[in-house]
Length: 134
Image (cartoon, rainbow, N blue to C red; front, side, top):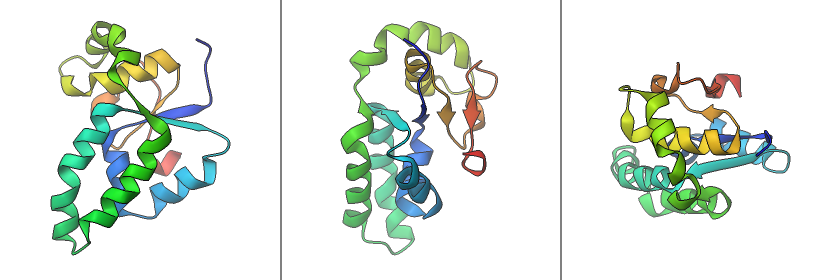
């Protein structure tokens, strides 16, 4: 597969898209000129953590999850798409956070960087962007 113009979003970016304006505005600004992909497990992780985070901030969690659902509509990638790259991804991420292997596998498959605020991807051999650099 040839390199594309896009980013693989980590779960923390999905959560930031729901909670804040900056990530959401970047996603909206570039949705017509770049592709954004996320492993399905990242949506599951965000759905798991968001209700408590939203509640602690006094935000109605149904509206927050609606934002997440809208983001998932075009960018969620099922594990079947990247599963064959699990071993290569686990080797690259090492012992940092082995549960993040789907993000690495999807980035390998699509030949695009990862957008994250998580230090665990650094040193994986995949370009990594933080929000202040996107």
